Image (cartoon, rainbow, N blue to C red; front, side, top):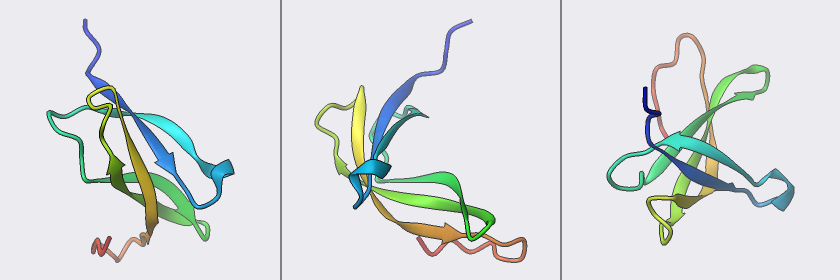
Length: 80
């Protein structure tokens, strides 16, 4: 059994202490936007990241935090 291809997503924030890297399923081109599950005000949400540098693609790409997309059980919209 072979592992699914992944790339390293470097997630950048305004506060350097919050920067981190995660492994994400790979595609043929770098995604323009990533949504990473998180918790916001005690509820399920997604941190939204925008692509800023894909120079090292397909091994890794850098993304800047663009905001949080709060979710509720009644809200299926995705404004981010």
